[in-house]
Length: 174
Image (cartoon, rainbow, N blue to C red; front, top):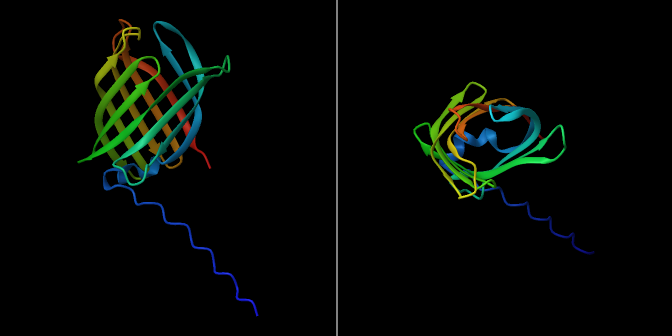
């Protein structure tokens, strides 16, 4: 008699989330949907967007990636990447890089709700390369309710006062 081959080992469990990002666990995954933008210096536009939040091996941050495609042209419009950091006490920090030559540092609140989370982040620093457009302020509010993620973004840029610029509604994928 030939012995039965051993059972394959179960894959290792994913590492536990770092305690600093446990409040953001509901954001993990990929989100897709549509949004619209306007600003006094540009024509209004509509876009398709995908955002992902990932937790690198127990680290005290979530990795963030975002990309948009304009609905009228089908061409890529904007992208950004960065890190969402939980810092305790209902506070959060966002470190963001934009391919337009901007780096954004924002801080704010993370508030749990009955079915999700509200993040409100306001820039403390917006740094720019010599060729980037002037952006003085950025303010983001993410509202997660179940499998729907909405956000609003306001900014003060190119000589304009701080005001609304973007809003989108995204749905959890998969």
